[in-house]
Image 1 (spheres, rainbow over the protein chains, first blue to last red):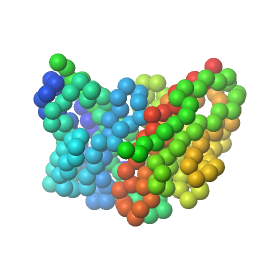
Image 2: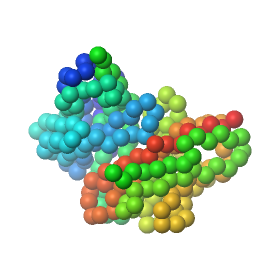
Image 3: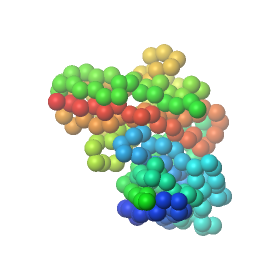
Length: 114
Length: 116
């Protein structure tokens, strides 16, 4: 799986958009970009994933550059409850019958402040 | 919304004792995983399981570890003879079995294991 690079920490004011960058310059064509977050030693929580198109769900938006070498997770209106460690993970697509592990890095610690 | 559950939430054991950590994956999921996180460190993959056999395991998953799906709902991780360094949060995860390349994994809340 391709390696990812994220800033170790970021701050965001409550109510503002949080934009979390991730670099994955060695990503392959069959690798997805996944975002998870972990709130204070709880289980990692799935946020969103994408292959090459931008994606949006009820939690966040994922913007992937055209060359797929980087992406940005956007939390449109951050709240205090969004304070967490955010992980950007690149994972190879898995065929039926094949389980594909997640390789976690150190992520970005997002602190949302009043 | 369906979720992965784990029991117990906390487990304290003496070094050398056997522990079994239990997980109930999301009901229609067919792929199962165990991860662990030592305090202050990264989340690490231990093992994946599909069709009643191990798909992949990490170097951490040595002969002291085993996994089992004893019935249609539970997925267990057994540590035969615990060591101090096994103290960690253990997370179970599961993903769907339908024909998809994505197989998003959903995690449980974890079991905090403390070996004394």
